[in-house]
Length: 230
Ligand code: GLU
Image (cartoon, rainbow, N blue to C red; front, side, top):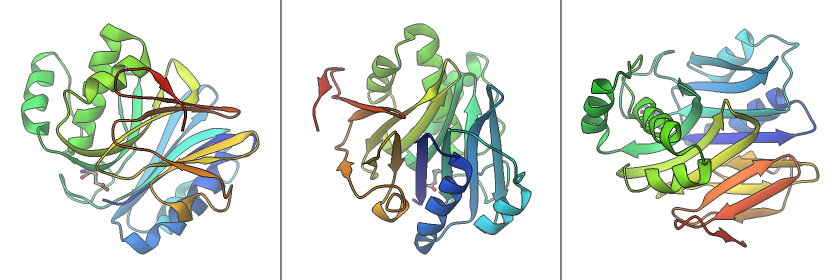
């Protein structure tokens, strides 16, 4: 289990994500990646090895007000560019810390439904589960509540959906996730060091909490889909 950081706000997410990931380097990792919105398209950049390798292949002019980043410690699938996060399936792009224990049976079911997998990760299977449920359900809060009954194991996710390009969605179970509350900017990360360069106000999410972040709003929901205060 390694590091996650997501940013939505008025500044350029690219250096903020890279700085946040560097603060999580102490946890160890084998690859790193980010996803941002560039010209209304999701752009995923990921690279095996150190964060500096990733930094070296990122266009210096890359700019986005929203993004998610990850350092990976491989549990399913070798350390490689393909297995590095973020993963994209259909409308869903996400990063994940944790282990999806029932990924193998889910992969078989989703393959029968027509999903094709590019990586050897459990994470890509989780992305396909979310995409599949989203295609029927359409309401991301309900989708994320539903997947807690499908996925077994541990997870902290930062998710961007192609239909809501100004929102980061998050959910966790047995893998940490905290929300950093800023001024016209918000952060969703696996650990405090990844947010202190943005804010010193934070909220620790409980298991199954669903969170929704825009640049000026954060909303929390419980497993029943009811909005809650934190
Ligand atoms: N199980 C996932 C993978 O192997 C996530 C690992 C992590 O937490 O970094 O890609």
